[in-house]
Figure 1 (cartoon, one colour):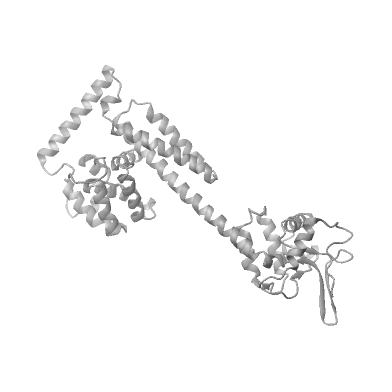
Figure 2 (cartoon, one colour; figure 1 turned 45 degrees about the horizontal axis):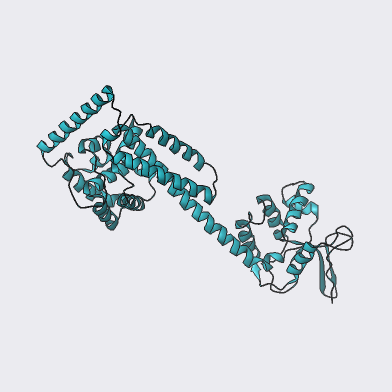
Amino acid sequence: MEYTPVSSFRRPITAVQLERHALADRPAAEVNKWHALRNLAAARQHFGLSDRDLTVLQTLLGFHPETAIGSGSQPAIVYPSNAAICERLNGMPSSTMRRHIARLVDAGIIVRRDSPNGKRYVRYHCGAKLAYGFDLTPLAARFDEFREIAEKLAHAEARCKRLRETVSLMRRDLAGFVAYGLSLKPDLALWDRMSDLSLLTARDLRRRLSFEDLNVLEAKMMAALEEVKTCIDAPQSDNISTSGANIEQHHHSSNKEYIDNREEAENGANEAPTVNHRSSHQAPPIKLVLSTCKEIQTFAPSSVRHWDDLVRLSDAVSPMMGITRQVWKEAQSRMGTAQAATTLAAMLERFGEIKSPSAYLRSLTRKAENGLFSCGAMIRALQVRQG
């Protein structure tokens, strides 16, 4: 029976080394060496390996002539010299290469098979092959382990990505609510605090955050959105200063809004249609929507003046934007036809920034159903962007 050495006079035997050799000696199913490398690359953080460690491993795999590893046949041992390895690594220093090899050995990815004199070589005797070098068999023996860890890490990464996107959308909504709130109640200190929170959150999102950190940000955003929503929905007299200047400013604003609304009522069909829907917000004045959202009006066969005109136009434009009929009808049902038309017009103003208009509108509809979205905030945010 051929004896497989575990150590040489250069390296003492350790418990970990014995464990690694036992793993390499265990029969393993045949696997594709490149598939094993791909799974290990996806799970490299779990094993404390760097990209350069895997580059060295990839080079070692290149010295193995077969694509398959395992199947209970001869161990997959490669025996290149240090100079040959460094040459394939585009001249990497030998000392650097040895450090990467040591990390791969410590992680149990490869196993050293030392010869009596510590050299790497192959010898044939009576048709039998005896090789000393680096054993790649652990890649086959641990293939299922690599794959399972890679899948878990990919799932965790996907969860983090979804949560990051949610926090980013919430932060953007908060900025829109702040812009809208400033136009309604400019003297409140709340807007400065919420604006600072929005900016700090945007800065945090530029870093790589853990799932726990993102959960904390989501909770902050949820609380902030609830606070600004409550403030915006509250009567203005409950939140504005009682100084004479502010009262006069509020009185002037109220008179202007009253005159605008009265003129629209006298012109007929200018008031937002009243329908049964769950959103507690109302659409902004039609004049404000039309002055802010110019793009949708380019699709109109004639001038858009009233809510009925904008609603009919949005019915025609929504499928052009890739919004399914079901999503559009649900938005009209949950938001109301005026809010849905306003939302669509605002989306069209920044259409190039929206990857999936149908999915985006569905998300806004759900938020509106929970009272967390107002199309007025979108209009005010567009006004800020347009200067």
